[in-house]
Image (cartoon, rainbow, N blue to C red; front, side, top):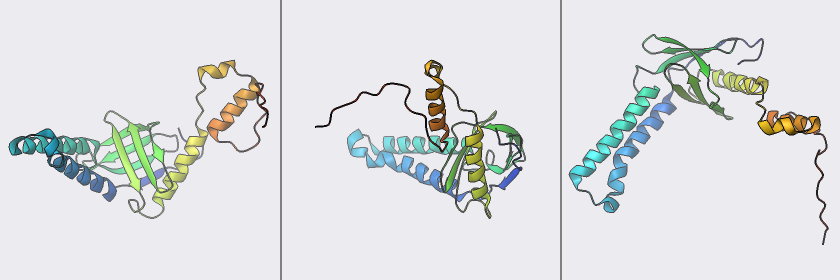
Length: 192
């Protein structure tokens, strides 16, 4: 989904050092983790070496499949079209049409993007990963998109009065303005 009239956002994401740094630290941690807890495991040096190598290889394969290290699955360019679709371009020239997942998160200085596509792609963007004001434009558009999405209504919302339903929707959307009074009686307590 995207808000109507949003321009196409084309981002060059080749230089994402943060992902590679996180992947390298995690792989090194997986490799040294077995050696750090060696006194608790009572394993010999050969078994510890096998365990730490296996953990590091599994971690490296996971980061490689997600595109954080290596080139085969690494995303070079992402394009957010005005109609809400995403076009992802990999380092080997493959172009994939994807949909932004609801598990995408954003903060003041980062964006954790996840897409639904034939292959699961994820990306962590922080300050310095994008040229110019690319990250700021992405964060603003993600915030606008979140506000323009329809709010899912739960089953218990059907049992609420219209005033309570409006208050619930305002709380979920984050809409400013006064909320209507509580539709349910409030128990009064005596002050002591």
